[in-house]
Image 1: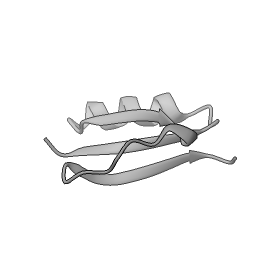
Image 2: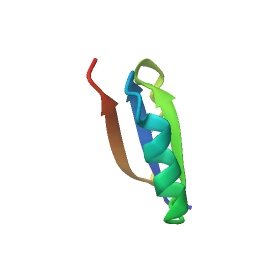
Image 3: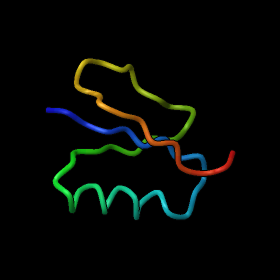
Length: 52
């Protein structure tokens, strides 16, 4: 399954971004900026959310 990663740098709208993606039937996962998982072939994009 293709997915989008959201790296949270402390933004107040990170959860909102994730919710909107899910409403569009896009699988996404939210991670703290310092805990980024290994990228594999299923990751189609990364969203950076915040201003750290």
